[in-house]
Each structure stands twice: as structure tokens, then as C-alpha cells.
Length: 110
Image (cartoon, rainbow, N blue to C red):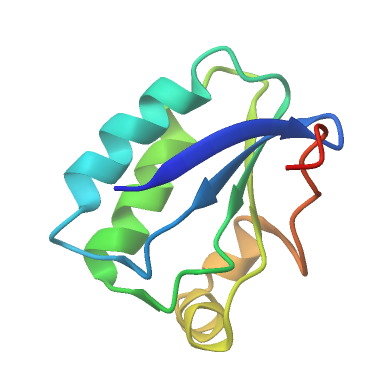
């Protein structure tokens, strides 16, 4: 699971480099997010701009990440592709997460 974290816009931003968050990577995704989310400030933004598919296991993994974050740390989503945005709307998860049209650019310009 290709996940890279950086600081941007006063938040820790985790950029998903894979095209899918599904059953085949859900456990690996949760484990890696636990590492990257550790010690995050009040906002952890998941940049999903490259993700074209999320199945129920992937959605469950994203919800699990939200639940294991430290108190006071909020998981937000950014740059959802149309197909992934539809999954969040259909499951009403768009009412659970703050969703941004795009992720903040990395602070170091990379």
C-alpha cells in the first residue's frame, strides 16, 4: 500500500498512491495509516485523488482509521474521484467525514 505523509495547511496529509482501497489491501491500509496517523495534530487529511475504486472492505478500513485516531484528531477526506465520491454518498458516509475538493499542497513544495 503506497501511502506518503507530509504536513500541509496545518494538517498531516496522507496521499494514497494506489488506485484501489479494497479487500486485498484493507488490512495493510489500516496498519500503515495507524503508523502515519500516530502523533498527528487535530487534522489528518486522506488525499484520495488517485483512488478510483473503494469496496466495502476499503470503506470499512477508512472508518476503522477514523475510530483509532487519538481523541481530538479528525480524519478528513480530499480529492475524491467521482466513482469514490458516489460510494460515500450512497452509504451516507459523506455525512460522517469532512470532504474537501482538493488536498492542500505539500508544505515543502514536493
